[in-house]
Length: 152
Image (cartoon, rainbow, N blue to C red; front, side, top):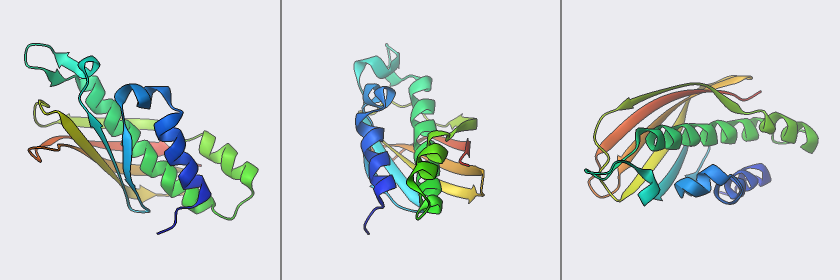
């Protein structure tokens, strides 16, 4: 499926222009209207418990929030397709997190991780998303999150 220019721009900025995403080492693996997937490898600066070498909870919540924000952006960009470019730019620039809930389920001791996000509900102004973080090697579900984002 061919991506719209707005979604292509989102993927490029997600990986190349957002400094925090670069710190996390996030890569966009999949972008679609119903689901996004990102991945990253553990880095020394991601460690929260140096004895067990586990991911810091802030890294986990940041990855989930970023994943939820990406799918909210995709949904908003789709809704705005065909609108004047300036309106698209202004609207998409205002996307932000309203609320985030994270449930930590397992200790994140792996080396590579994958996060997936999907839209639960999207209206004209607000999108609610569901995100999951997995250990790539063991397929263990590390954490789940629900995010609410302003999209309009």
